[in-house]
Amino acid sequence: MVNRRILGNTGLAVTQLGYGSMGLRGPRTWGVRVVNDHDAERFLNAVLDAGINFIDTSPDYGASEERIGRFIGSRRREFYLATKCGCVYTQREDHLELDHVWKPDVIRRNLETSLQRLRTDYVDVLQFHGGDAETLQREGLIDLLTNLRDQGLVRFIGASSSLPNLPALIELGVFDTFQIPYSCLAPQHHDLICRAGESGAGIILRGGIGQGGPDAEIQRPALNEVWEKARLEELRPNDMTAAELILRYTLSHLHCHTTIVGTCNFAHLAENLKAAARGPLPVELVSEITARVAKVMCP
Ligand SMILES: NC(=O)c1ccc[n+]([C@@H]2O[C@H](COP(=O)([O-])OP(=O)(O)OC[C@H]3O[C@@H](n4cnc5c(N)ncnc54)[C@H](OP(=O)(O)O)[C@@H]3O)[C@@H](O)[C@H]2O)c1
Figure 1 (cartoon, rainbow, N blue to C red):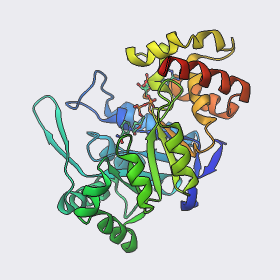
Figure 2: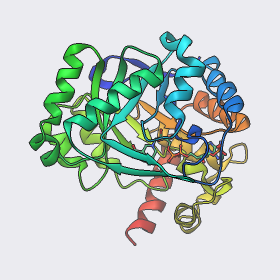
Figure 3: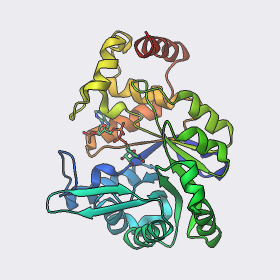
């Protein structure tokens, strides 16, 4: 049984380890790795078999929505589904061109397409994929999302956001959830997560495993630099991988209702489930990591 938390005022009991499906985007999109249909099917079913009940996707994640619908649409009652809107995407010969456009017809088209691809009548959370408070209000998009919620096509509305737009979006007081980046290697949104959580919103953290940390297959030099400069290796207990330390630090955030870790690797999925079962890190370890990283961020 994967630990569950209540996603703020939504009341949904979500697994604290969620699944981010961006990696299932498929060929001719972007990035260096491509997961084929066969593996995507096995992977999505393994996620549900393991008991994870929260999946994040987006219309502009290539084949992700379509694969969720095709491979686990028949298991729809087993999971909560969050997707996004405001996405304009054009398939070029070898890549997917992405943009965000804040107009009602884009939002309506995104949701209609998402419901078809996901093979469902409703999504649990529809999130603005970025955007700023002033534009979303001026274009009537918050009212539009509220209407979609009233119609039952969407159960809850949210925003996937970060600095500098996030504070004003929290201030609006209209969102049921916020999706925010956070890990010990990128902790800049710590206080805003608290503010959003204290407002009663459900908190969905992304980047919660620091994109795999220093042992990741796809290396992220900027994050590795934080790991090295903060000398976090010294704090890593012998029985814990770097990825486990990073993930459990994220799970230790008071307002982390779920963190949508992305992986397309079965061994990593198993490792992350085991790490999540071990729960938050000891308080002293969290404090020491926080202090060391803070020194690196603001020397
Ligand atoms: N603006 C937005 O709304 C936005 C932006 C970005 C992401 N997202 C959402 O957030 C989700 C996660 O974001 P993210 O991919 O940026 O961050 P993440 O979950 O921190 O990192 C995912 C990366 O970590 C690696 N990984 C996972 N478990 C590992 C382990 N145990 N050991 C080593 N490496 C491991 C994965 O590679 P392997 O496949 O090798 O495991 C993958 O490359 C996305 O899927 C998407 O749903 C939203």
